[in-house]
Image 1 (tube, rainbow, N blue to C red):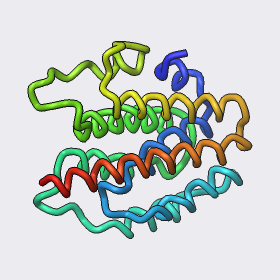
Image 2 (image 1 turned 180 degrees about the vertical axis):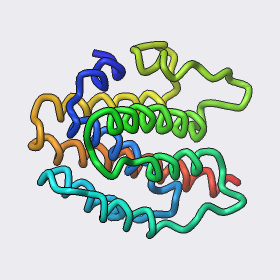
Image 3 (image 1 turned 135 degrees about the vertical axis):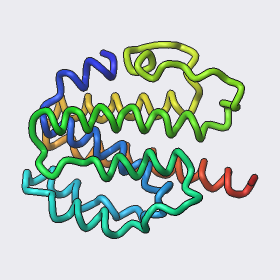
Image 4 (image 1 turned 120 degrees about the vertical axis):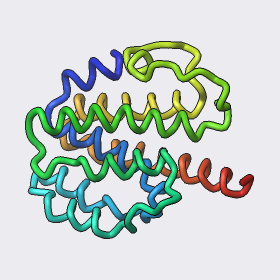
Length: 184
């Protein structure tokens, strides 16, 4: 099943986990530590309101600086756009936007993609093609699919596995960012 189909079929918890996972994997771009969004995962697990923890996470991050690149701006927007109430159309729109933003971030940071490579349509990637997706984008696409599949198959019990997938993706992105900084 394609990522777009999984998003269309996901329940509110699955959508919130999908959006949160995308945001959490991109935290290294904002200088946030690995525990920044952990309270939000706990709220998903117990079904409680996450608005206070969401506000705290947003307040913990340093404000955007004048030299912030596009990838960091996309990551910041994901967290800023998170709905205080995890219901209905708001969480669906947020999860969908986070999916797109995260794939764009991974495309921008992928060392296998140079500035002369034409950008493929992200919606094509999310719909199941093209087959020639760059390695970093392909891995992010697989992570997004896995998070939604785990939540669809296991409900709240799948949150632990979704978090594990997210932590792995965050480590990969942190390594990519670190390598870029060393080469700059």
